Length: 185
Image 1 (cartoon, rainbow, N blue to C red):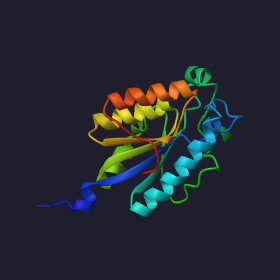
Image 2: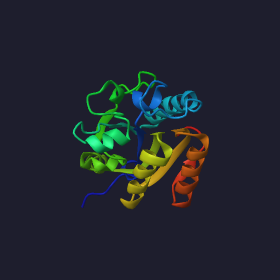
Image 3: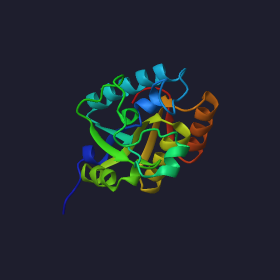
């Protein structure tokens, strides 16, 4: 019978969600509140360093919306369309060596390869950072909870369209059982 070690039973992964040009940069097609971006990038950078020093896995997840999804791309102002400049990861967050998974909807779990990879690596706890708090971060957190993961969100590393929408999204997630962590991992 295979027995998990204590380490693998508590394996964590840091998920960095949608740190892409269309959401981070002020010239992007759907930018987050720009007053939040410097602190969010600093918080995410600290989280990457902390995760690596703790032996946690680092995973990047980015929108790659399908070019032929004309109606939804129109609603999204053609943000993060696969292959576009806006879908590229921002250079302001160093994620060298991180595993990357594309998604084409709000939740990172729309890509079944993500969960397969997490299960293969015996991850039980997910720490989330990213954009947007009320959309993709929320959708990923909810799906992770429903799949049995423990979910933590680093509030200092999460942005949204406004300060109010960010705070409301985090408050809703806290009520649903997500641990909201004010600082680094």
